[in-house]
Image (cartoon, rainbow, N blue to C red; front, side, top):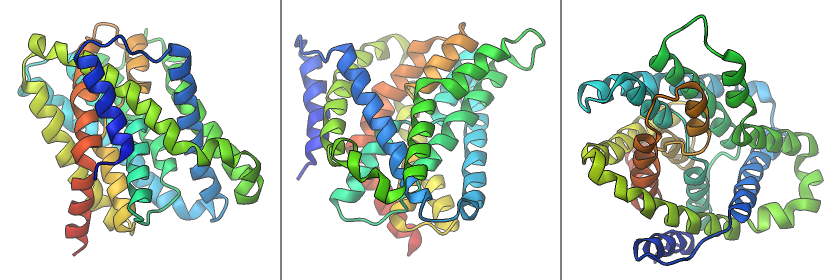
Length: 310
């Protein structure tokens, strides 16, 4: 049986594909995004309140390293095999080095719907993976220049809406703890799946619109947007198991490494590398990788984790 939240994505995709005038108002989409991001942050913060933060530092260090390494590996692949110019290769690589909060939310829903245990502090990894890839992507595209607008770049990296909401949610959950969060639990935690379903409806509508770009940029992006996530997921699962995560936790980490940003990185690249073509990055991350991950990727990554654990 297909998960209902996936059916919402398929519904939105088909509605847009057949040119329906169905739309979610921008203000509603912004509200859904805010609720998702802050709830994910709070879930991680509540878990942090249950254990010493210092015990997570080794895992956080490894995850930060992953965020730096992925764009460094992918950028030359895109330049050599895809024949993309330097700025475009760096931008796409940064998108894939960062994470998709929507994909993470679907992975968490998959775990909970299938009663699969996972480490509840994993939202911390979402925050950790958002930032390094942006920094590396900018440096790959432009190098280190004396006239770089580091103030604007830093503001977008560290004070962009996505990062602020995740960190804010983490802080609220951490300070309030499991007991303090009870009063707001009905809105943020109990309605999480319904909010995610509406979010995926909008993602389906947007994804179908991105498909038209494929005829302009060839099918290299199709192969890249499917093969690379699988390879990144295998690496992420292996690292997760090596760090001592459960099969569920390793699956979620694998999903994070397999995902690609379509919120934080596009905004940062627009400011820092305006010469990069945003259509290329969004076509790959949102038009190909996002639907692949949410429709078939996450169950595959779970099976990979089970096999790798033995």
